[in-house]
Length: 221
Image 1 (cartoon, one colour):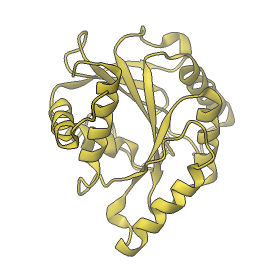
Image 2 (spheres, rainbow, N blue to C red; image 1 turned 30 degrees about the vertical axis):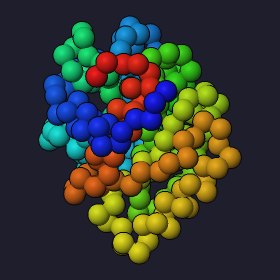
Image 3 (cartoon, rainbow, N blue to C red; image 1 turned 90 degrees about the vertical axis):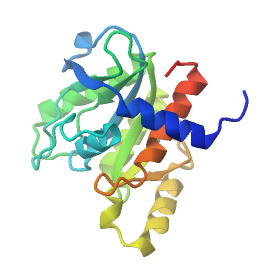
């Protein structure tokens, strides 16, 4: 395959995410998933990592994904069509937040089973972006999520959030620390992105990465 022009991918990614994007489906149980269809990209992360804010920034909207000061609000798999529903080239999947202690053990168990089943049995799922709070780096719940993804043989990539709240002198060290934690993980992508939903830093690069995946898969987008 010919080398893809990063500038072209960046612009194509910008145009794709500037288009129509709307909520189409929610599933709290594995038998409630939508039929296999367009390519899917999923977003996972701890309950207070800023996942909803990143999805809103990625799509250039203020309220695509619901944001809340109360962690744990996403309690199901939420599917969004990027493009005209029914002919969209890509779906975004907002996964339940993890690592929130105030949620009952039964609910945590239900979410874990749902995520495990989804990750192992979804042929349309291309990659999971695992959001990690850039202020703190990797925490035990993140490592548990990596374990689940490795066991499921599902490719994933870490996206650090809240770059605007991290001192400039600490940014590179934080990235390198996360990379070091991924070296021996078989399903992890080696590159780590650092983003800010407030300033938009890294959002264009994330769109570019997603567009690269679509092109590699032969998706017309």
